[in-house]
Length: 249
Image (cartoon, rainbow, N blue to C red; front, side, top):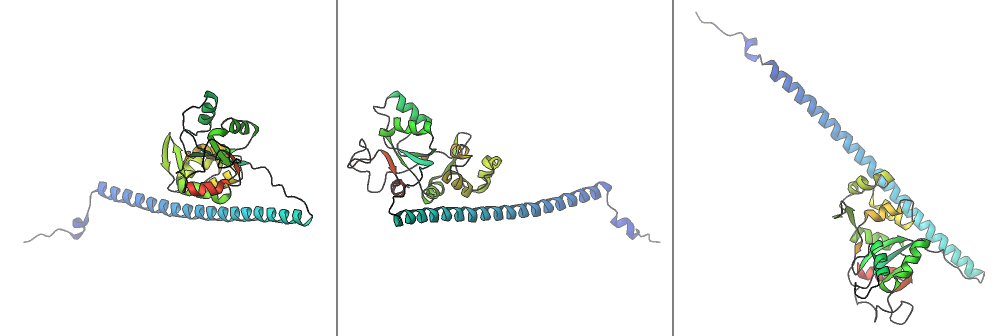
């Protein structure tokens, strides 16, 4: 007489295996939920960055149109238009370490201009203006426009993180270091520099000093003479700086 095993006994499984499957399924569902939440957060962040960028462009255009309007108004009334004093300058070191007095050498260190063709953004105050006067024979500087700032940050911009020179590959790197200031994208950095915003110092300290090349076609005849002199290069270039930076990027 043959005996058969009941069907229900063939599908019985250990309780530990059932608990493991239940735990794994819960973890899988949690992972899916987190991934969906992360995608939603990234989408919202992209929208915020895009809206900010649009707002910045409108602000730049509005400021440019206002300046044009004031120039035309002054011309129609037979007067001269005097633009506002620049709030930010871009400073480029032109000369090396030879024959530099201790005081200018220290100022160059404070400005983080440690090598020839290094460049930094500096907010103009009474103190920084005096510093620029001290090192004027060794640097050239002037007011950058928005395009110059954007080209420098996008093409030659590196972050300084833990004393290391890190390429800025995405906005997450910026948000991690500057998110506490409300700066989450590279356009926020450009806007902060262009407007000399309240977090200007934090932004410039985040950026590694820009390493530029010798300009295409070379400098003018002599680096020892002021820019306003014939064939000179040093000192304040005012609104002629963007042309030089374009050649050095």
